Length: 151
Image 1: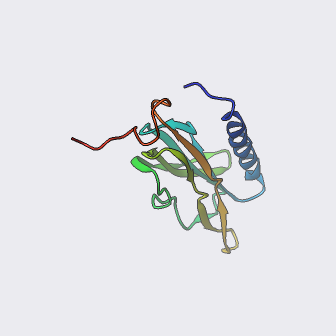
Image 2 (image 1 turned 135 degrees about the vertical axis):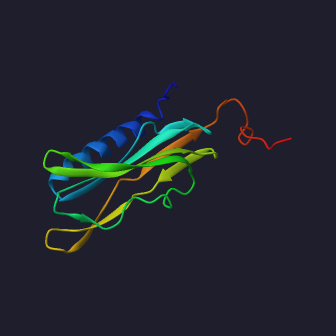
């Protein structure tokens, strides 16, 4: 897929957000990141979205990533990412295979993760929202002609 000049600032912003979030892990005992394998798709094309929660081992995660926050996307598959150790921290999460059937911009919202810190105080952290651009399969066709009803 060829990327236009209008898409490069968005890609740079997503890269900056991923870098900023990854550097914030040292500041909090819990961090959640959202990542996608592509931020521009054609209508009906599958893409992967992964939410990773990285935390100190003595932290108790209260809620997990739910599918109900992914309105506007069709969930084709999901998987729980079993906890594993990375350095001195535990990493766990959830992955989704998603698609969208409407043209335009769709946002995967910031996901809230609540946890109990080492002093048993409830706190929350949020992932960054991600914008997905859904393009026509054929950009020369008029809007609305991508998907037709069955005959």
